[in-house]
Amino acid sequence: MRILMFTGKGGVGKTTVAAATAWKCAALGKKTVIMSTDTAHSLSDSFDTPIGEDLTKIGKNLWGIEIDVHEELKRNWGIIQSFIMAVLKRRGFDDVVGDELSVLPGMEELFSLLKMKEFHSAGKYDVLIIDCAPTGGTVRLLSFPDMVRWYMERVFNIKRQVLRVVRPVVKKISKLSLPIPSNPVEEISHLLPPDEVFSAVRDLYERIHGMKDILSDETQCSIRLVMNAERMVVKEAQRSYTYLNLFGFSTDAVVVNRMLSPKVTDHFFDEWKKTQDKLMKEIKELFDPLTILSAKLIDREVVGKELLMMLAEDIYGDDDPTRHYHVGKVIDVVETDGKFYLTVRLPFTEKSDLDVWVKDDELIIKLPNYRRNVLLPRVLSSLQVEEAKLADGKLTVKFGGGENERTKKRNS
Image 1 (tube, one colour):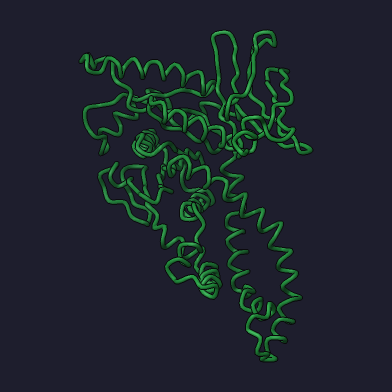
Image 2 (cartoon, one colour):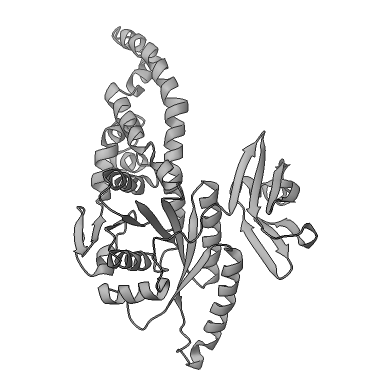
């Protein structure tokens, strides 16, 4: 199954581009499913047809689904959430606050994404298009499986073994009916998760297990960044792109939406067109070697099959949207012996032409007629650059040595 995930800053037309891609895939004879992990679903609006929480036929070879996140949350997290709320209530939190605190940010989207694994395992469809939450939520969403796996492997098994020993002791002591309400042992007896909670966590872990492998398999899954030619939008897309690489996800293309057409000759738009042209040049440099796709702004809202197909033709032309526009990570970050190594592909580059430095939270790479700004992850932006090497078409920058001067000043 080919999986295409679309993400971008809110309001750039991410859902519309995803919907257009789905129609194009279906028109090429591919059995296509489009689903949304965004809690604010808008697929129904784009297709101009009702799409429910069950798989809905939209057209020939095309199905859609808008998942009920509250139902998914109840099904996947209900038992665990009830236990957490009980603990919080004992600590003095009311039910409303307890309900909010017992759900981790991004969890609704995570449970929506579990549907992806179900479609993948079923093997009934050729293409799965995923309309993701805005970029920040997508990064949290895609990193969630790693966090759950770390907890289960590093904490769960240890805690489970300890509680097997502690629980019988606590139960025996609690039966003595000692009038000591502040006794720590008595407190622990109310905080120990019952077996059904452990079983629910284990079941969730097993369902999430393997999802990261599917999403990070560049032969199956590609992420496409949707943006407009606006400075703030491009900056956010840069940061998201770095983080997606950091977590091991493959981005194969950028879609620049709502570009002004050459047919627009009104002088009112002259400055806007100049700004878009300048930013488009920067986008090509910043995201090289990714393929840059684009779509023109039209004079009406893109809703319904006809306009979505028109948009798809504008973006992809005669291309098959499921093709791999780029394979492999352009940016990679690894940790070895307490040092971080950031690698950027720079093919056909000579050392004498290269200049590298860090400014604020950006790594700046300068070549003749070329400049690339890599927004650094938080873990790197606070460290010093110790070394930079160019070999075999790759620039490797070594970070370490504690806080850099900017961070020291900020923290002082």
